[in-house]
Each structure stands twice: as C-alpha cells, then as structure tokens.
Amino acid sequence: MKRRTFLGTVAASSAAVSLANVRVALAAAPGAPIPDARLPEATIAELQAEMTAGRLTSRRLVEFYTRRIASLDGRGPRLGHVLEVNPEAASIAADLDAERRTRGPRGPLHGIPVLIKDNIATADRMQTTAGSYALLGVRPPRDGTVAAKLHAAGAVILGKTNLSEWANYRSTRSVSGWSGRGGQTRNPYALDRNPSGSSSGSAVGAASGTCAAAIGTETNGSIISPSSLCGIVGFKPTVGLVSRAGIVPIAHSQDTAGPMTRTVADAAALLTAIAGADALDEMTAVSDGHVARDYTTFLDADGLRGTRIGVIRERYTGNSVGADGLLEAALVALRERGAEIVDPTNVASLAQLTGSGDLLSWEFKTDIERYLAEWAPGAAVRTLEDLIAFNRRDAAREMPFFGQEIFEQAARRGPLTSPEYLQLKERVQRLTRAEGIDAVMDQHRLDALVAPSAAPARPIDLINGDSGSGGTSGLAAIAGYPSITVPMGYVRGLPVGLSFIGRAWSEGVMLRLAFAYEQATRHRRMPRFAATADVPWDGRGRG
Image 1 (tube, rainbow, N blue to C red):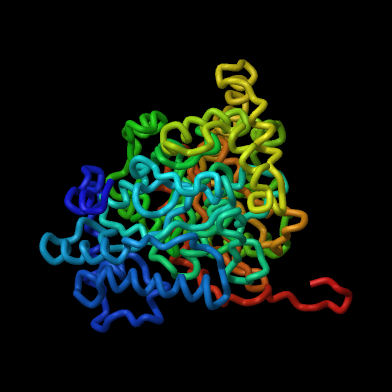
Image 2: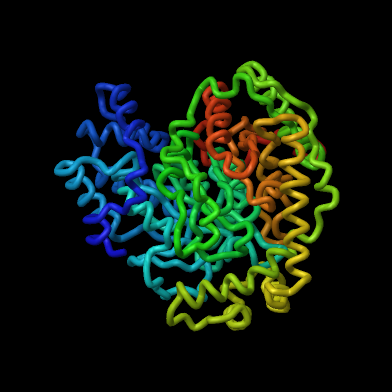
C-alpha cells in the first residue's frame, strides 16, 4: 500500500478503534505542553491528547524520536536497536497532521510513531530482511497485514528494529539480539547485558523511548522474554487473533505478532488496531467471534478484585533468587488488590512435554519457503537449502559467532502430511491445552496463571551464545494461548516481569488483570544506560 493511497483510505478494520481513550486523555490533559524531557515516557493517550489540543504534531514527534534514535544508537550508548528509520516518516506524519486538521483523527493511533520488527513486510523504501543479508534489496509486493492495519489506523511506521536473525531460529548457540545486518542490540539497563530476543530491538525501542510503541513477533518467548528483560509490557495474543501474512515465519502453529509498550493501556490500544481475521492468513478464521471491538474497554484498576490467580512454581521458579523474591512481593500485591491466590498450581503435563522444538523444525521449512515465494519476489534465495548455501558463502558476515545447525536440521524434515509430524503436533498441543492450561484452570477455577517471566538479563556472550533466561513463555507459546508480561521490579538494576497466562481468546481478562497489577505497583522506570549491572563485588571474584 503506497503512502498516498493509505492516507486517503481508511480500512474498515480501523473503524473498530474507539476514540473513547482519546476523549478521556483530553479531559485529563494538562494545561501546559509535555516537555521534551517527558516525551520518552509519554503514553499514546497523552500524545494523542497533546496533538488533539494543538500542542504537538505528529511531524514534531517523528523528528524527536528520530533524533533520539540517532543519539542512542549512534553517538551515545550505541544500543544498536534500529536498523533503519523510515525515510518517508516525516512526510507521512505531516500528511496525517493535515488530515487531523481537516477531517479529525482516525482513532487513538492517529499520528503515533511505531517501530516494527524487521520481519514484518512493508512495501515502502525500507527493507524487510529478518536481519539477514540474504533478503537485502528484496521488496515485498505489498504491506504485510499488521503494517497495513497500522497504516489504516493512522499510525506512522517510524522504522524497522534489529532482531535475533531469522527470529532466533538458526542456531542452538545463537546470541539474542544479534543479526548479520544489524550486529548486537544491547540492553538499555546494562549495556553489557543481553536484551533477549528475538524482538530485541522492539523491546529496546519501547523501553528507551525512541517510539511511542513497538510491534514484535513471538514463536516461543520472543515478545515475553525481551519485554521482561527490558522493563516493558509485552503481549503475546492467542495464535490466530493477529494475522501473520507478510511476517517472516518460523512455525504457523505458534507464530504471532503482538504489542510491546511501556504501559498496559498502550498495549490494549495497539492490539485493537492489529487484531482481526484476514483472508491472507487462514488461521485467523478461528478468531471469528473472539475479536473485541476495543481492548481498552477491559482496563480496570480494580480488575483483580474477586479473581482467582494460580501460581506456577515447578519449573518456573528456582531460576533466579532475585526473580523469586520479586514474585513473592507480587503475590502480596495481588492479594492486597482483592485476588485470591492459589499456590501452587503446577502443570503436571509439562513433565511429559518433549519434542516441541521438533514441531517448529517440521513447520519451518514449509513456512519459510511459502514466505519466500509470496513475499520475496526476485530474491536469489527460494528454498531453505538456498538460505543455507547463502550463509556458507557469506559466512564472514552471517556466521562469525555461531552456525546454522537448526536450518540444517529443518532442511532434512519431510512434508507436513507426515504421520510423525501430525502425531507430534497433536501431542504437544494436547499436553499444553486440554491437559495443561485448561485442565489446571478448570481444576482450580482460575482466571489466570502467573509466574516470573524470566530471570534477570545475563551478560552478552558472543563466544558461547545464550545461556538461557529461565523463561516461562513456553507453556502459553506452545499452546497458542495468550500471555502478557508486566514489570514486576528490579534485581540489581535489571528488570524482571510478571507473566499472566490465560485460556484461548482471554485477551480481555489478561489486560484487565495486568492493568490492575500495573496500576497497583507502578514498577516501570526509565533505563539508565549503565555500562554494567549494579552487582557488588564480594571479594572472591563473584558478583
């Protein structure tokens, strides 16, 4: 969709975006404009109120964020989180400012600058590469559906963020936040720490205030983990709620896009804009009847009262003393806000869960080749074998630190009609759905499950690769069920999130609970871009 086209046409999906939160923000808007010093933490509603009141323009906001990106990626802490800024962003913003004056705003995202992950196709002057040189210069034939929905809602796609190359699906020894094209993204709370992945750049952008909000994608932890480690809200919706058309895939059973924001309210506004069925993604047909008109209507500061929350301890605690301590404080806060805590509510079927990684391996070959055929016309790589050969030829740039054994394993898989694949898919989904989340929630009459989202960020290790984050994303990810992480506190200056996990299509419940917890605790604080974590020396060489 070209710029002039989408500015003149508002898609039907954007009509579902309510102006209610804009009116609320206007009613509460301060009499003085938001100073530049506050813009990095400003919410979507605050920015919308400023623009509606005439104290701020989308173009000025784009220019502010663009300067901040240049400062933080180039001259300052060198976060390495944005691969490129949209060269048309300022002119798109100016046109949206003019549209606001003549026709009024389209909705809560009108003129709001959003960063998106570099695996979401855009038919503009930016690249869509998944962080790899293999797709450099390849132009998608049209916007991916998420990008098209953002355009229709009046958002400005500010730029593309760095990511773990191929969404962290190339090597078992990969380094999160590293791509051949973009190099290493750094955690804004401690620059020597891993930002997690694969939506590393999107998390860092939202955390550092270089955008109003960001979009990431997840197959298993790629929204939840970097959001937790970078101190923001990350929402992985039910698979099928958000279209994956035009998103470089890993596996259709688990892939989804989702919001990465500084507040739960901003996540709700962003989800409203991108959710909905799409003929280009057949899996979204199951969302019929499950898509809310406006997800911000679920926000309730008293939303924990009378709820039952189960605590998953087995496998999900014991990974970090600091994170476990924060969990205990979080449970106190949940009780104080009226929730009944059922502790523990362990998921027994997890002990039988093996082979989930093999499921992704089966689907990757088929899904990536389908993407290349439809969304990368003219690319030199047409098959997974082509990608493997490309990486070998360009190993100096693409494989200086780790290899591509996951690619090589996936290339040996058979078709998705194979009985082995079909039996594996049925088994892992049954263990995480009917015998997993659903069974535990039925047994204890729960509204949600909670657990620490991940351990605090570990140091970046380009020699040995990632050492794991103690993440709890796998259960909801494999089931395809929703989960949301909210800042839970800090361990030596490093953020840790609390995850709420629910049944399929319970996005409204997740937002209500997460918002109530967020409003009760308000743990989020801006990163300091410290050189290292606040770890005291114990005299024996251990921090």
